[in-house]
Structure formats: C-alpha cells, structure tokens
Length: 293
Ligand SMILES: NC(=O)c1ccc[n+]([C@@H]2O[C@H](COP(=O)([O-])OP(=O)(O)OC[C@H]3O[C@@H](n4cnc5c(N)ncnc54)[C@H](O)[C@@H]3O)[C@@H](O)[C@H]2O)c1
Image (cartoon, rainbow, N blue to C red; front, side, top):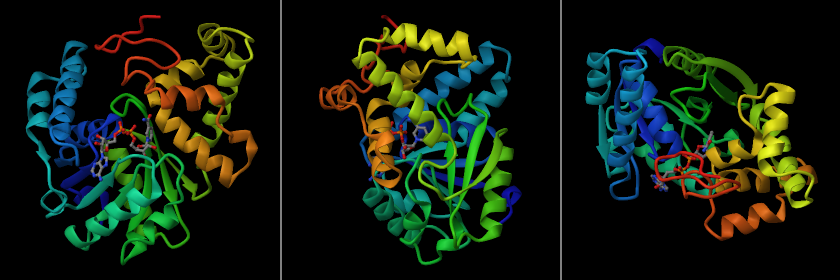
C-alpha cells in the first residue's frame, strides 16, 4: 500500500494522542474513524480537534472552510469492528500496556481489510511483540507521534526485524503527508526519542526529590541553558505522569536501573496526579489547560 493510496484511517484510542492523530489525518484529507472503548471519549476527542482547528483558523494557519472540511471527515465510533471496516490504515493509541495493544491488534486483524497498514503509537514497547499478534506481522510498524500531535513535527517510524519494507515506506510517506518529518529507527527499547528524553525527565524528578532546585527552576535551567522549548518537568505534566511511569518501568527492566522510576513519580500517579490532564502533576493546571503554579 502506497501512502498516497491511504484514504481511510482508523484511530484506536481518542485520548491525548489519538485525537491529535485524528486531527492531522483529517487535515491531510483522509476520512477518519475515531474509536474509543470509553463511552463518549471519541466524541469528546472530536470536540478537542474542533477546538484546536479553531485555534489554527484564529492564527491564520488554515481557512474556516478547511477546518469545516477536516472536522467533517472525522466520525466517532464505539465499536472496534465497525471502525475498522474499510480502513486503509489503522493507528493504535491506547494506554502503554503490551497485553492491551496485542489484544487490540488481534481484533483489528480480524476486522480491518488485509491490505491495511497497521501502526502502533507506542512510546517504548517492542514493536516485534505487538506485530506477533497479527497474522501478517510485516504490515505492522511503529509510528511514534509527539504531543501535541498537531504541533510537533517528528514521527519515529520503527522497523522491527520482520517489517515489510513497503510498510515502512508507507508509514514514512504517510507521516510526510501529515506534514511531519519522519525518522526511521530500529526496534530498540525506547527507540531514539523516549530513551533519551526520559533520562533527563527522571533525573529532573530525582533532583526535585533531593531539593537541588524547584521544578520551575530546573525547567528554566534546561530552557535557558540548553535551548529546550519546554523543561523536562513541564513536559512530564504534558505527556502524563502515568504514561512516563509506564515507559520508565519498561525501560528499567529492558535497559537498566538508570530508568528506575523515582518514588515521587510513583506516589503522584498513585494519588491520581497525572499532570495537565488531571489538573496536577509537578505543577497545577486549570481545567482549560493553563499553568496555575
Ligand atoms: N502522552 C504522550 O505525550 C505520548 C506521546 C507519544 C506516544 N504516546 C503513546 O501513545 C499511547 C496513548 O497514550 P495517550 O497519552 O494518548 O493515553 P491516554 O490515556 O490519554 O488515552 C488513551 C485512550 O485509550 C482509550 N482506551 C483504553 N482502553 C481501550 C481499548 N481497549 N480500546 C479502545 N480505546 C481504549 C482510553 O479510554 C483513552 O481515551 C501510549 O502508547 C503512549 O505511550 C503518548
């Protein structure tokens, strides 16, 4: 399947990443089926896409007609098989648990046409193990988008040992159609970006624990001292503390103790402090996503 032949894209999971992937896919002209297992989540994902597209119109980045057309191409689904019927590509963005991702792809394998490109947005999990859950593992690749998807330019296309080169080429082409810059990486734990980014994030958390400096001052150090657009703790709040904890636990076991999650990260997740999406993480956030303190 060539990237230019992909007309219909199913996105599984309508959370932080899923609604962003639906946004860029619809803007690139695809029809999008957005499916979430949680009642109402796909519809609220589409609402968020609407808000982000409206901001784009305000900023003069797209016309009102393009916004309406893109929004009109996204439909909410509450049933996986209906969402996958007729898809040329299925992109999964459910929580970072390998058992869940494998279960989803077993169902997608039955429901989606056999020509469809399959992609997982996992940040760190082994693509080969996810691909082993479908009958033709060569058609499944990693497509690792960044948050917020409609803003961030990078997509890591992850190639496992038995990935079909045509699937890799299609994923690279699709990322380009979405206006992104793809890089191709091999199926090593944490790929290129999560492995490196997490080391800085976890060390910043340990520095807060040890009283080296406040979260805000550590973030300022990385922004002004190293030119990072966002500090590692603010980024952790944006990504989701639960998401970062899941990746750290996996990388600690797959690579080594440098990735052992700090206790404060575990404590905050256990207390439901998941970052921007829950209103508190390393900072406090208003319901409309502004930093309060
Ligand atoms: N948050 C980030 O910054 C970020 C960045 C890159 C990649 N990722 C990866 O993207 C994936 C999703 O992360 P997220 O931050 O969007 O998570 P999220 O928690 O915001 O959203 C996950 C969504 O999946 C839905 N879901 C749960 N079980 C499901 C099922 N069985 N079927 C369908 N939907 C189901 C949930 O209801 C939720 O809406 C993870 O693999 C994560 O590692 C996250």
